[in-house]
Length: 553
Image (cartoon, rainbow, N blue to C red):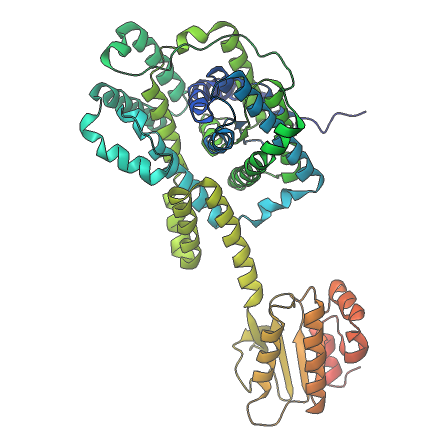
């Protein structure tokens, strides 16, 4: 049996880039280790479980997922959903709590597998580039504000972005100056590396330097909070303790996580696929996400998700395939086995500052400006998506992004471009505004409707045709519908066309269709419109229709 379908996000391997990919993986591990440790505080699980999200889940997604960029690991949004769902079921951090968290990951993996079998990856197609820009910009602001507490050395209680910002401003008088100075130094250093030495792994060097300085100068003595001790050793694969009763109670929690996973992962993978002109298989990504969450459950950690910040991190570090992610998993394994001791000296504010620089990279102000210049309406959609992510939440922002995208599709189909076709001086057909009495040539109206005909736009289609003819003068003997864009016709629209044909026949106007494609012909046959209109009035081209009218058979 061929295994060529495995590791699609790795193949084909560009061996000349492998050293860069490995270096990007090392950088990703260095950045992610402190970040996922922070996510365990949100999830309520032991610190070491954060490191476990960077082992088997990374490998599992690399084996089955399509995206070359998407990083699947711990994420703040799903960690928050998990903590809310498990509240009151077991003490946070307890053995029972960890087992329940693993069960949520297992159930999430099962639901994602069902989504793959149903081929629900098409959901990503309903996320336009406009709302993707808004989504990532909103995530950038949300994440940047979320780490302000760590960077300032103040305790933030709120889970909402606006509340976090207000608390940070309120507590400015009690800022720890040493923490603030270190945070500022980290941000400036990373930005300087990015500006003046982009080929160097700036974030990695900054983190290593911060750990060394923390141990050497005893940062904790100066009031700078450290990550603290981290247990070592690789996890032993095992199924979480579970019962049918627990599974029933946790299914809604898993369902909420899956909504977030599918939408956020699709949004992030699609954004980077578009940016790098990558061919993406969303259904393969669903299988990869299912495998990643199954791997999380087997290794005693919590649900994992496609992370926008971590994906941005590996891209900025030079990673261009899942080779970097596999390298990151290998680095984390080595850290768990041999190097957990130095992590205890990592200042929490350094973690916050690194994440802050990543968040800054997600804010696409130039892209927003381009959208505003070219399409003010779409600019409003992008801003609305970003504002929803910041003011309400990532999950709601994604749902709104998908809703906005769908509404734009419906709007374009409901109010498509229409025109009366006329010939210019060169004999080429061009569209003119649809106004009462407009003619394509004496005795002929050629009307173009720029969308498939369905229940929502059929009345508009009919009324516009009536408006063209209802100008008080004599009706033209021929009315031709340029049906090139009308690829389909549903039941309701067929009734409107039938009634329109009858009305035009009473007015001695011959109705014909040009540019009738195979799909439209099938719909016309199915709804008995071929016999009503007459096969002799259905033309493959406009040239054939005009030849018929002019008597050139």
